[in-house]
Length: 422
Figure (cartoon, rainbow, N blue to C red):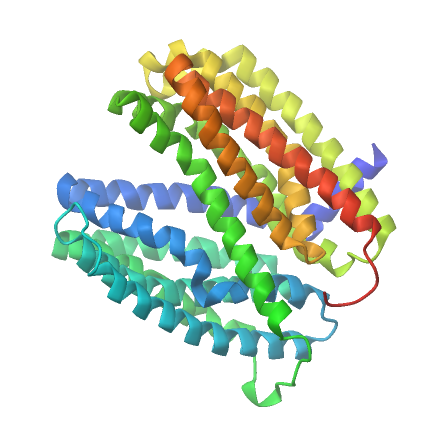
């Protein structure tokens, strides 16, 4: 228990409470911005913007060809402030150029694709510009984490979502759907202007780094592939329920029943966001990493038992808060809760530890295998069991990816040598 207390104390000392609070507040503010847009913009017009932005959402992780992911891992391994600042400048310059060419490619492609909704191509083309400020915002947040300034990272998250509410409210009121699209672009731009000076980076003091080679770029690209594949893995259930059952009501039911379970993932995300830089800095200290693994798994095992116990006792009451008709799906809800525990205990930690040792491509392979298994299983289980079948598949996939990540990390970490950059 002493080790568990130390684990929690370290989390608190790294301003973990700030990140947790910022995550909760940001979720609420983001939901409020979406609600405001829904009140101000006709559903049909808003739906076209959201459809276009969902397309861009899958591409955003590839902004800068994933160099922000490389910044996080390789930056954590650097020892001096000067080296970290030089890496930031490299990633800023090359990632911005890469993002610009990616935007051009999307703009050209958008007018060659026969979208089903009118004006979708124009919104996709315009919203593609969001990739550039979102990339810049990502490296800004990462640099704060590399400097162990988690408070600044947390403030940035909150300020971004406050600005989002303000810009969505004003611009949606004035220009409807066009205003909403503009708000999605200018919000990250304004946030960057507010926080960029806080980094105190001097371009004249940069030094040449010898590891910004093909392996550096490859790491970022595979990390982005893993993120996109994981996003699609979470979205595929909704798509297949709609396709296989041809029932819009079933899609809505599953979407809202899964809302609480998937929201619980922020617990693991908060700890990893807080600790990633710290355990990557000490990734070559096997004693430290082994202790961190034991304490993390013990902590989230307790948390998982608590979550399942509360969910088992109050599943119907929790679903009633969403809609009285959802209480009949308490079994589906509990199945998803069991699945989430697999991510909390295993996947959240070991997926990131694989990234820490430079094996991020393993995450992509695991997500790709899981995606294939998900599709195959859902084609059998959804027609037979409905949304419960989708929940069974998701729960299995969550535990499968978690345990697979755990096994792969243990195997690879034994072979891990003391070469600083792989």
